[in-house]
Image 1 (tube, rainbow, N blue to C red):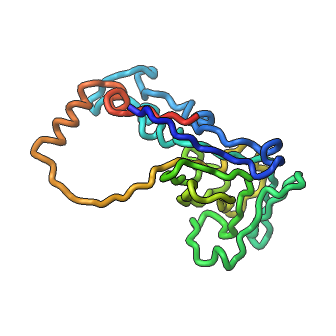
Image 2: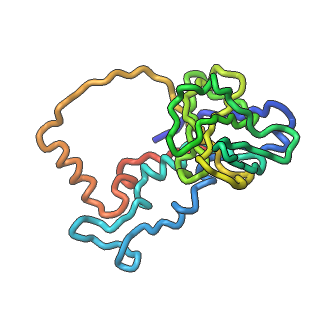
Image 3: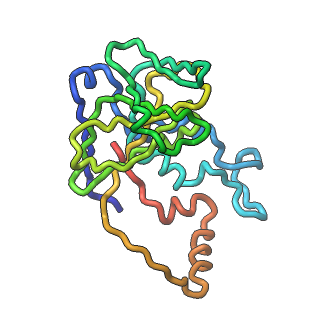
Length: 238
């Protein structure tokens, strides 16, 4: 069981950030609506049933998926932006605030960086204004919000040693090709997941005879949420 509580600190870089811009929140507060709407069981009028293929549970009962969606913290968009893509397929972003919401990586900075073909290669930097600090030995995985894969943009992932860096982490994003529209304030922009830095080495072993079978039988001995009930440790982010 987890007992130690580490602290992540989001430092506002100026009063504008503290007073105007949206504050990062635990990802548990921004569970996407599609996940909330998922039924826990398929068929049988939405009730549990043991079928020939096993329990009629859906991904809603998959604790690892929920843990991924709710891990860490989410930084949201602090102002509405209007995105327009011109006839040359070049996107621009506009906002109504005096402080900028985005800047742009120069072509030289991002040249050669592989971008999903569904997204425009012009890279924007989100100017959220928060410096992220973690305890000694802890970094942060900065990634696209795991539960929000259908946004009109994609955040580019990175790992940052946030116990040492004392400046901006202006996460790069790219917009979907041809996108035109408004992205509203409060939209999840990227997810911050603290991770402990440790050294690892890999090795390969052969499982003992019937080891896998016995482990599977232990899980199968309970119908519903076997992993969550028997193995999972709850993660807390506040």
